[in-house]
Length: 76
Image (cartoon, rainbow, N blue to C red; front, side, top):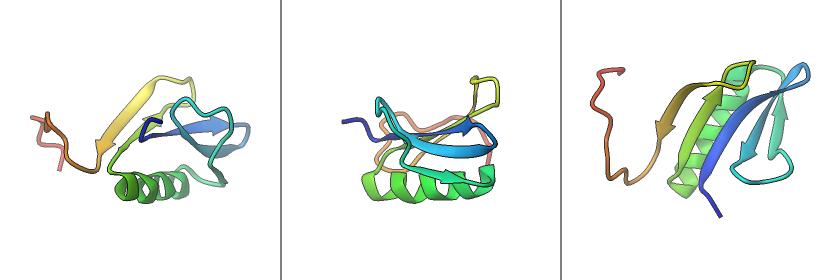
């Protein structure tokens, strides 16, 4: 199973969903809360968090673990 966690809009809430899963892992009132939960899960599994815009496009990605291709940007 994939170790990627997606933060997506689900109605008025934000959902954390494991990649290729049918159901959401958790629901949150704000995107910030959902990102924090996804981050906790990704750190534990050494995976990646993928944050989506309301229209479904990817807004941002963060890797937590042994990334063979580290980013070249200076985001942080």
